[in-house]
Length: 453
Picture 1 (cartoon, rainbow, N blue to C red):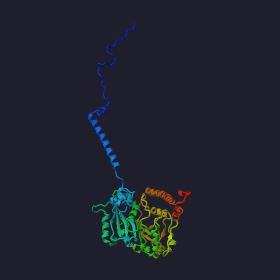
Picture 2 (picture 1 turned 90 degrees about the horizontal axis):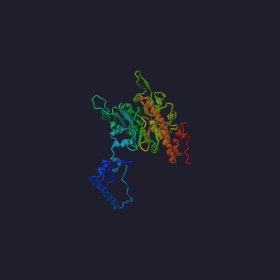
Picture 3 (picture 1 turned 45 degrees about the vertical axis):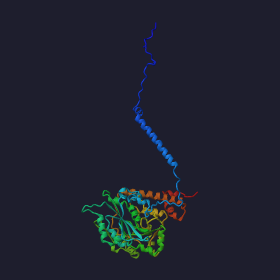
Picture 4 (picture 1 turned 180 degrees about the horizontal axis):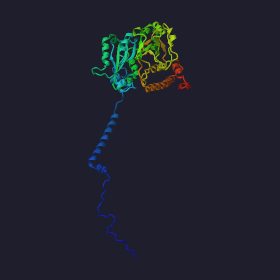
């Protein structure tokens, strides 16, 4: 017979006399939140937020209507001459860093405009010679003031000067030159750039487009003669030519470019590897008649400062018979053309600083933008040719060449798009862009049609 197992007499259900079960919090956070101090703090925070929100709502509703001025003009300008200009609150290093964005702070923070200011006050219509001087070529300043009688804006880029005795300190040599030469004190403004001694000398030379922009920007007249720092000298009185022919000055004001043909003195190489010029500095020609005679005698040769020797943007035979006020325009412009030019200081495109030393890039965009290039009939520059070219690595040459090839195409597209957007693609101003940028099979513009339809 089946017998059920013994069971406890205690009931498995709770009875009235049994105690209630105890439940413990499953986490420490729960125990903290149940504490009286924490709950008091939370209630106080909620009450503060409610009162703060209510205060702002009431303040907003009670705010008076804004006052509207019919003839109010916001006093905000970027003109540094005005006392309320926002530029006045910026340091010079910040302004220069925004102007020259392609350069690192070790360059822009060490630019000192008007490190030396000349005693003269140039007039707006004067032509300022804008150039840059290397610390090992300070003697060129003396040669420039002997050949050029107008104001000079020169950038001097040096390594950080050392105060150690016996070391080469270019600032001391510069000070000695200015003390002993009254023409320097009267004509030359020096804008100084110092870089750490860890930089290579080639690195200093690679800032040439920055130097050109600085020298031009800080010129104190409305027109500048952009002279490259390769030993070239302006042996004629360019400023007098423009004063004698006011019609040239009007062309200059409207944004045209005037070219000074460049010539080199013939040189011979010595056994030691040095260069000996065929003409001494004192015998350089200062007028066109003497120059043509020197060219016939082959002591002077035509040098247009181009990268390719086969290119001839200036027709020498036509220039030789050109006289008086007759100007000749450059027709077959080449992107590698880089002569000395006279241009406006402002309202003209600046040198692209993506390149190290490429004056051709400065002028090519001017040409594409619509500026006409006129060859001056009686003025020119002379280079004695005794300075050796700056040595750069093959890698740097390759990079610069490829960059400029891309820049040519990029500039064409940029200016073509701007002309088309302005409805000026078929205008006379855009003819340089139409002709130059549609050359070659690789040009992107050669197969494009800018029709309004």
